[in-house]
Image (cartoon, rainbow, N blue to C red; front, side, top):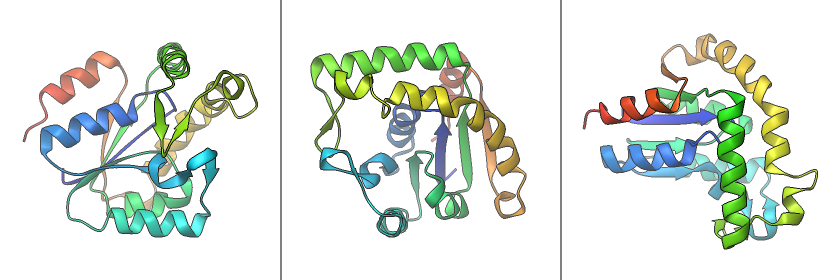
Length: 174
């Protein structure tokens, strides 16, 4: 594993796992959210996003986290491994609710100066609502994507529980 993509529903722990893999394997970590969101939660255009991702993944080793379909062809086309965090909805929602609460209360920066707020949490742009709306879609979509000929080169690591993920990470060879 030299070029790794970590995917999963919002709140599944993609960034945390990617950071852990980055540290363990001593390879760069690329967070797609950092390339996608500008200050004040402004999204970059697809062209800018594709250029940023191409540049960020130009090296020979990396671990990237995120689910942006607009750059999937770039990420998965260059990756050798996809790690799919496929946890149950109750696990994801409990993690996401706790993370969101913690971020709002502590005003922790999410990316590029952006912070989660109570207003955003209870709006149509809520990350919680987004996770609920996309959970089933991702669960159906990923197995179909993995079968596509253009992604046949990928080794898929399908992790279905927090304990399995912990065990997998502990056994990850440097």
